[in-house]
Length: 252
Image (cartoon, rainbow, N blue to C red; front, side):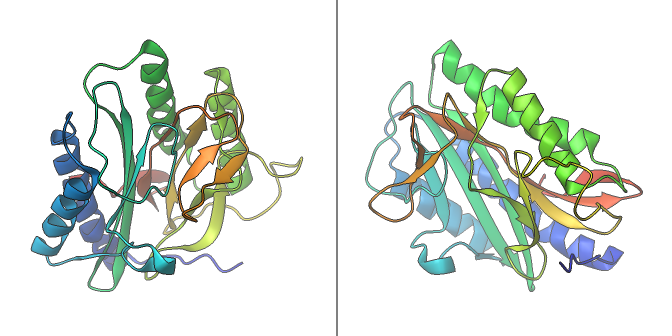
């Protein structure tokens, strides 16, 4: 497994790409309201990304047709924007990738549409809080499996379960690079596998299910739901390991 170690100037290039992602997510969050169509939100984000001199890196990636993965309610990740109009009480996930000068950005949020149930508030909070917990505990020298185990424990303690079969990942001059970073421990030994090192850049992205973590891909070949048929949530940041700690790149 070859995990790239980025030089400071490369990290700044990645930061620039990720700032565009953060700006697009902020724009979508501000326009998350009843009556907005998913296609309109997708177009809004794509226009913003291109206005910043970047490209929407998800568009065409592995055949994905849109600029933004927009996942509503039971769809946890990889939702394809359609004509659906948001309704009061929905929850909606936005996952955005960009390319700027050959470097990639990637981040995601889940937003509430108006007032949502306390259960949905807790579901969204679990994804967000587990992400920021992961960012806080990352240290130079810890193993990626240790990080996965800590994320899983956090999610389980909140009363939810991680979506299985999908994971965080390295990022740099390609949108998906080594390593894969599940939100759960694979195998029995968290002390196995590669270590986190200064200069590594990767995406942490907790994907949260209510009761069952088994993933089901719907007929369109993209939308991912849980086998429990219940709502899910998703948050993501791109981070760089600098001076032994994780620094979030995907923020304004």
